[in-house]
Structures are given as C-alpha cells and as structure tokens.
Length: 108
Image (cartoon, rainbow, N blue to C red; front, side, top):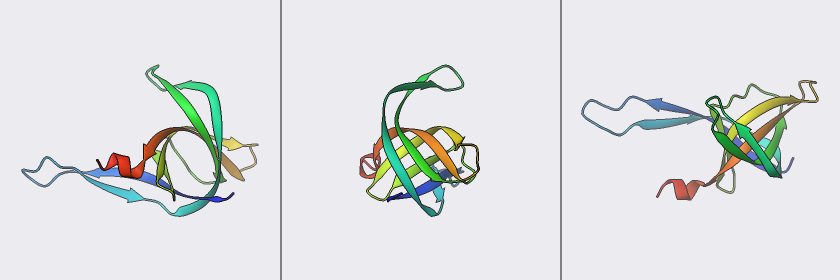
C-alpha cells in the first residue's frame, strides 16, 4: 500500500435563500491504499446503466458505500461502483472504481 487516498462522502447542503449554488462538504480521513488498473470490466448500476470499471483499490477494512468517492493525493478522483470484503476476513476492502479525472479538471 503505497498510495495516500482520501475516502470522501459528499454531502450537499441546501443553498441559502435566493441562491442557486449548493455547498459541498467533504468528510473523510486519509488512508493508505494499493491501486491497480483493470482492463475490460463493465458493471451495471441499479437502473441497468453500464459503468466501465477502470481501477481496483484495496484499503484496510472500513464501512464503504457507493455513495463515497476516492481522491488520490496526486489529484485523481475515482467513483466507487462496488465494494467487497476481500477474502471475507474483515481485513481489506476491494473497491471497484471508475476514473473521474483530475480534481483540477472538475473545478473548470
């Protein structure tokens, strides 16, 4: 595990009266992770839309849902498609993710 990641939960708060901008609050602590590239894996979400899985991320066991996303310390962002208890021993979690690009690109 050589990558420093931040496992974030995105909370959107209501805008102030008369404003159209939502505020985003990111919650999460840094974690160490192993990241590997996947090739040719397609998953389907709840409505049958296909999502291309680009990376598998392994972290120490914790509660993770697909509502979370990952931000790597170099600025890359990943959306979590699936999570599973790797080897079913409650030691590691395997996260199947799709690449969402660089954090800087999302600010444009």
